[in-house]
Length: 357
Image 1 (tube, one colour):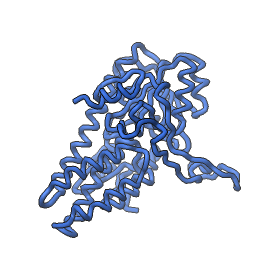
Image 2: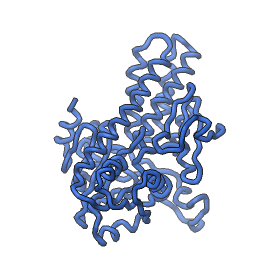
Image 3: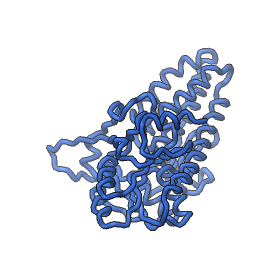
Image 4: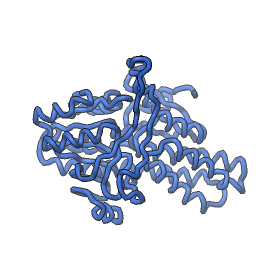
């Protein structure tokens, strides 16, 4: 592994919205596996290193994976052009494939690959400059989309209330600002957030390590709870919304998100709590008619057997470790995107949203 760098070495503060950085011709990722105990950047100088960083959870969250992929392909183009100024694009096909295999569920990864591929195939000469400009556009567009999502989602929250969120859909999971946490940030600025209850999100504990860290940084009141406590917390009252992100949304409005989201949606419906999904339109996959077609990544059993590097499971036990689940559209009250809000989503409403300019 490359030597980790402190934020000051890159001229940065340790902030959630500085998690993906292009600096002096290389890509640097805030290593999310180390938070909150340590904040350090991993330098990446090749497409292979970028694919491994995505696979190994250095970076996670569908929009952040897409932005990272775009920058990774700039590194790939640089290397391929040096190898063959004439045949560089043909050589990049294996880079596109390698990157696509890194994480199967997050559709933003494939969206970013296709956007860079579409530009690259029409280029003459050294592709690095144009592709870097495009990667930076993707990054900037994601931040702008998140802020728009935040404002639109906050408008749905009519009065001060407590909110439950699951996993991390904040600045760390996006180009900056966040989707679900973008809504929470905007709503908090309007005085509408009494408290956020963050599910710890086993087995990687993104809620405990990342979401709580982001909210504490921003001065937003946050209480951490075990994933299994959410239904009981709803029964206690005072929860107006569940707000989550998404890694892929099917054409009919079915939503793939971190494992545990489906159960949270069921509990919300039972207790009369509204359920909001905040995601950019790049997360909507119109090629999949329903959530049953979304590929669900399954990861190693060791992630469930251990916690904080310490084994907690009995030897001889087996584990089932899907990373995501699918929440049916009928359990979703609102999908909020930068193009607008879809209430009670279905195929027709999503099609009209995606067609908007």
